[in-house]
Length: 281
Image (cartoon, rainbow, N blue to C red):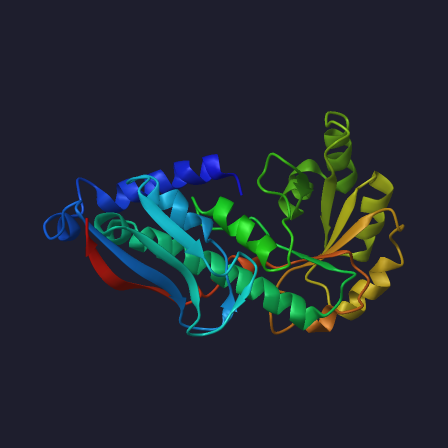
C-alpha cells in the first residue's frame, strides 16, 4: 500500500471527523495523560489495516508505541487481540473512529477474499476485484483484496483498456473498437473485451483482444466458449458471481473470475478498541 497516498486520504478523513476540534476529548483530558489500550476482534476473520494505526496516530504526535500482534493477512479468532497501543489519551481517543472504520472495512474485505478462495478451491483461477469500490476508499480496499488471497483487476480507468457493451455499441462493433485502441495504445497495456455471445467471442479473438470476458455465462457455457479462445488469450468470467455461486465455476477453464461483491457491500469485520489504563506523565 502506498503510504504517502494513504496519509493524504487519512488526513481528509480526520479533517471531516474532527473539524475544529474533538470536544469530548479536549474538554476532559489534557496532553499530560497517557494510556494503554488494545484492538480486539469480535468475530473470526482475516486481519487487514494494521498500518492504519501508525499512519493515523502520526498526525497527532510521535510519542506513542504500537505492538502489532496480528499481521495483515493473518487469521484472527473472536476475542483475540490484534494490536496493543500506548500513548497520549487524546491521540488514542481522537484517532479511534478513523482507525476502526478503516481496519473493520479492510479486514472485512480480506475475510471475504479468503472465503471466496476457500469456496472456489481452484488454484488455477485467480479471483480478482472490480472498480466497484467506495469513493475515496479504493486504495485501502484494493490493498485489502490482496491480503485475503485475491488479486487486483485494473486499478482505475487509466491502467488498462476494458471495452464493455456500451463502448462496443457506440463504436459500431468489437473489431472497430479494438482497431481504434490498438492503433494508438502502447504495447505495455492490455486490451480486454466484454462478450455476451458466441459470435462476439469469435470476433474478439480475431480482433486481437488480449483478454476476453465471458459476461453472465454459466460454467457450462464458459467451458464451451473456452474452446474458441487460443491459449495465449486470458479469459475472465464475470457477472453476478458471489460467495454462494463461485464454487460452481471450479474447473471451468478461465484464468480469472471477477467478483464485484468482494468490495461492494462487504460486511466489515467487527473490531473494537478497548482502553486498559490511564497513566500520568
